[in-house]
Image 1 (cartoon, rainbow, N blue to C red):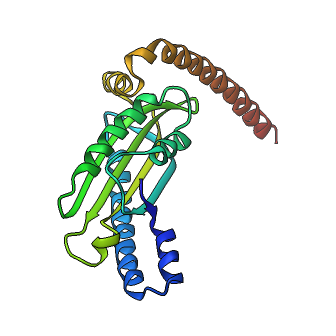
Image 2 (image 1 turned 180 degrees about the horizontal axis):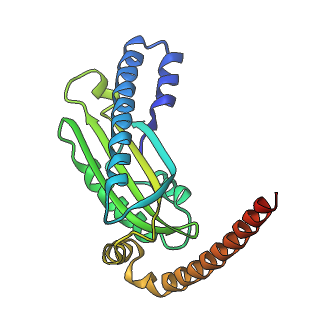
Length: 218
C-alpha cells in the first residue's frame, strides 16, 4: 500500500538527505496532529450517539504511510483482521476496502479526509468501529517526485451498550457488515453469545450477593 513514514525517515537519515528528512518530518507532524484532532472528535461523537450508545472504548489503532497506491493491499486487510478478529467481519473488510480504494483513487492535490463507522460482531461482543482516513497529495516538485502523498488512518472500537441501543439501527448496521450469506452463521454466534452473557451475569450476581453478605457479617 505504501511505505511506513518512520521507515522512510530512517532511510533518508542514513542517506543524509536533509531536505527529504525535513519534508518527511513536516508531513509526519501534519498527520500526527490530524489524527490527534480526529481522535478527540470521534470519541466525542461515539459517546454522544444515542442510536448506538457505547459502554466503553476497548481498542485503537493508527498508522502513517508515504507514497500510497490507490489499490488496498494485504496490509490494510490484515490490519482490519488483526484488530477485529473473528469470522463475521468479512463484510466490514469489504466495506472498508471499497471506501479506501475510492479514497486513494482521488489524486486531486491537497488534503482529503473520510470518516465512517460500522457495527460488527467480534471477540464475543458487539462493537462500534469508527475509522478515519486522511491523505495529503502533493502538488509541487520536490517531495512529490519520490513521495507523492502522505496517508494515515485511525480506528477505534467500543463495546455497545445493549441495554440502550436502538434495535432497528443495530439490525441495519449488522446486516451491512455481516453480509446476507453470513447471516445464518451470525445468528448462531449471537445466540451463543447471549447465552454466555446471561450465564456470566448470573455468576456475577451470585458473587456480588455473597460479597455483600460477607460485608454485612463484619
